[in-house]
Length: 303
Image 1 (cartoon, rainbow, N blue to C red):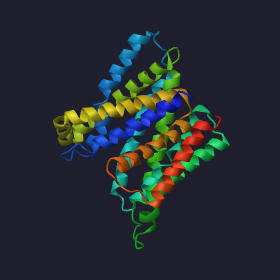
Image 2 (image 1 turned 120 degrees about the vertical axis):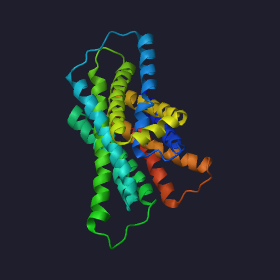
Image 3 (image 1 turned 180 degrees about the vertical axis):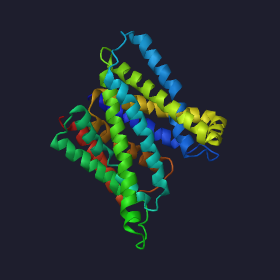
Image 4 (image 1 turned 30 degrees about the vertical axis):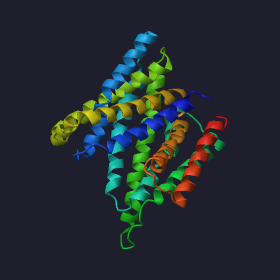
């Protein structure tokens, strides 16, 4: 099995764990604070991870070219904007449809991979990605009630598509930028490529989000400080997932990594069934089978 596959599965598991831990943050800290926690509380762990790798591997200092200098801020900014759009989905009446749109990320990641890196996806792998996206969409569409017939076209179709596809495009673009940043650091092992890019991105995101919150959401920042123990766990889980994503994307095309990452939803359902004893509906089971089929095809098909 290629190394990027278990690394991606690990990243998806950590991302699912981070989401679960975030639900235990109490006191209504706010959406912006929840976003800041991912970066600000994860940064020390990212720096520590990079420092340990540097001491163990003892590489020469990499050449930092122009690609790294534009890819890091562009990717980090796109991820923050994507997170903001994703949070906006919760304000929509037709939330399920918008969420389904947002899960087109692997398709859009393939487009950005082609534009920024010249990476091409085989027809067979394209079919595997589409199966997984369709499975996620089927589950998402089954989670919400249809919008009112009296709503206009913008409320029923336009706004869900705008927020959902916008979030997916920004997430896909940020992933492609991260791969550019990793590959641009020549002369060091792939683990350090990923770690150095992760530290640079997380530091910029922490600074940008921190300054914004000091100016516009100081009360949320204070609430975050009061819950530093839980926030630290969220930051650790979040940066562990990011370590996995960056490392996997330093080894494999963005489209394949993000498509395999849909396995996160299977972890979510496993927790629902095994821990909370919830029952899955027919649409959930169909979607899970489609995602599982997509994951197996991505692992087994030649690239």
